[in-house]
Length: 392
Image 1 (cartoon, rainbow, N blue to C red):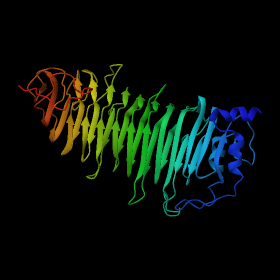
Image 2: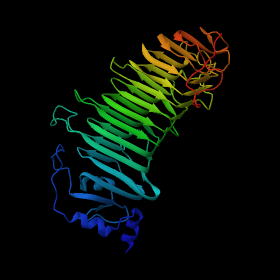
Image 3: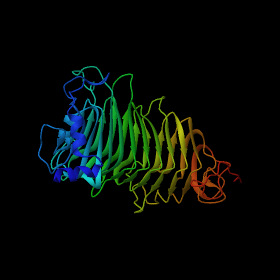
């Protein structure tokens, strides 16, 4: 009876779940890795309170992952699970169930906490096979010891969705996604999550690199040594609606070393420096082929005491990006440094007479080759305005 009461938190009785497990094991769907790692249960209930058994339940998340069939669902009941988890060569949805969050708190796992990996990442493995994995919380990743490499990592041809997950330090990286399979691209969707580098800063809170297409949306990201969000090496991304604070010396959002095919949109983000730290060089550092830098708010980010000659709220090196409708104000050194010519019209520079430096007014300075007229004469990032009229 106790077990049934616990399972009903999910809205599905254990009887219903077990009946699904009585089916004969089914072969993986077309394209699934046939490596004996697929399991037979369409749905597995994970509950740390009950012992392991042959049916579709498990006291550990890893046990649930091992038992579930390709494309199945692992339902994790509220509680603390002292383990790390590897999802290898299998599509699945890992979903928490209950009013309280699931806490994943490994005691000693040097590499990471949740590792999602597809075949084809080493030369010894069979050809690449794409997997689709969704991790949906509320889930809290909170390692008990220092030295953990990452909270969640996707590697290879992985379509990884992470929703409503909190990642806390000590971690070198909160979420990282990378792919080196030639001629194919992985995917990352990170939404509604809280990536916080406390008590010690993480190196990079969210890291996307190589052949990955990412959507990073509506997250709260705090404290990093290097940058809060970093996109590099042939990764495309849409970075939208995030709240960033206490990011590292290299920026709230850092896009760099990207080849000529890369496109990155940075839209509607708020980038803050609430402690007025003097080591923040950039709010946005952007080196990519093309994209939009629009509707972002970067106020009082770069402080006067920063000792770096190229410091700027926004630093852009590209021929095809636009930087418009942003609120950039109260930044020392420069609001914008840009090369070559880019469209930087309709930004609010903190003064109704426009930007200083190479601009005509007294607001945040602009240096380089940017078209800044017309400019906004009042804050514009959170408005619906699509035109402006500010001019000398």
